[in-house]
Structures are given as structure tokens and as C-alpha cells.
Image 1 (cartoon, rainbow, N blue to C red):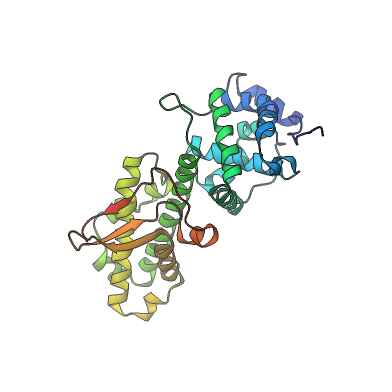
Image 2: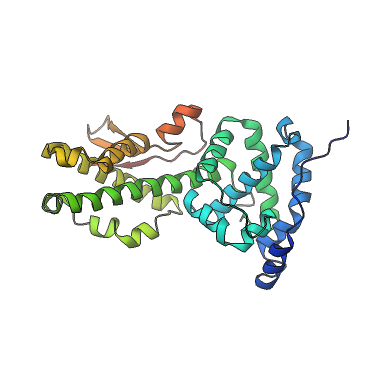
Length: 296
């Protein structure tokens, strides 16, 4: 039986005209927009049964969006904004300039599917090989990026943004609710770590960044929640922002005691947050990183 894959439509005229005025023919996203159907046709020949379904086009779109996130270091929220304003993204995906926004939650759902479905994950890996071939992704040691490495980097930056946004909100609310109490318990480094500048530049791009920042943020959250409990002030503990912080602490971090030193440590959940674990189980990642901070 002849197989006719689902392919992207032609590049919309308005998008093509706008992109031609802004970018060269060799720009990676422009090359992707021109070559996308030949890339996807090759993938469809070796893909699973799901690529023979009309929903395959949705898979391709979210797979490419995930790659864009990785290349640009964008969180879910930042990517949605970028797809609204960036002509190069619209060209690569063959979307009209007035295409409606994507939903951040759908990006998370797509990654959950990849974690639990080896076939879809393998197709994603094959896509990475081909995108490296047109210069959209860099190669490391002669090999394209590992699919799980891309997924984990994107998830970590999105989760970090969620954590930081929650901390920002609770500190702002506490400053209004009981500024004197907050002044007494605030740690000196908070002024820089949770400043407006940090809020705008929240993404991390390397193992060094992750290993340094994530456990320290977790330690700050643990300290702040302990001080809130110690204060025994209903006016503070009942705040919605404080409840949100408790939930984030539970979903994104886990505490444990070091067997050698008996120290209480805070560890960022490496593979996924607790909410994802409940939906997809605990995925096995090769080369998982542990983000641990010793001491109180």
C-alpha cells in the first residue's frame, strides 16, 4: 500500500515576503522552512505507525518547537511569546503571520509523551540528526545532541522559571503583608538572586549553572518556609503565595540526609518534577545530573 505522509502546507505568502526582507537564504530557520517537507518525508519512511496518522503534523510542530526552545534557551512561556513575534519561527513552521498563540501546557504534554514513548523519542532523535545537518543544531564530538539531553535542558529551564516566579511572588507579597518580619529573616544574597534582573535572565545553559544555582534556590525555599512555620503567623502562612511555594517545593525539590555526614540536603528533581512523575512514571535518563547542596 502506498504511503502518503502528512506534510506541511506551502509557506504563506505574507510570511515569505516578510522573511525575505529580513533574512538571508542561508539563515538556519529559513533553510528549515524550505527543507522541512523533505526532512519529514525521510522521517516518515522509518517512523512508527503514529506518523501515518493525521495527528503526525502536530507531533512535528511540537518537536520543532522543542528544538527551538533548546537552541534559543527558551522556557515554555518565552517560546509562546517568541512564536507570536518572530517571523523566522513562523517561516520555519510555515505559519501565517497572524497564527494564534500556542499553549505552554501543550509543550509540557508533548515532552511527557516523548519520555514515555520510545518510538516517538527515536523519531525525535532522527529529527535532531537532520537539523544538525542544516546547521540549526551544533554537533558535539561529531554527534548530534541526544534527544534526552535536549528534553531535559528544556524542562529544566521551564521548571526553573516556575520556581523563580513563585519565589518572586511570595517575596513581593510578604513585603506588603509584613515588611518588618521579612526584613528580619531576609538573607543578604536574596537581593541579587531574586532581583528583577534575575527574573528576566532566569534560564541556565550549562551543567555548571545548574549545579550551582538549583540547589541553592531549593535551600532558600526550605529556609523561608521554615521561618514562616516558626513565626506561627496566620496572616503569613495562610497567604496563597505561600501555599504555592509549598507546592513548588514539593514538586520540584526533594530533601534527603547524606549517609556519610548526616547532613540535611536539598536536591532538585533531576529527571522531572513530581507532577510529571505522577503522570508518566520516573523516566530513566542516561547521564542524569544531581543538583545537591551540602550544609544548611
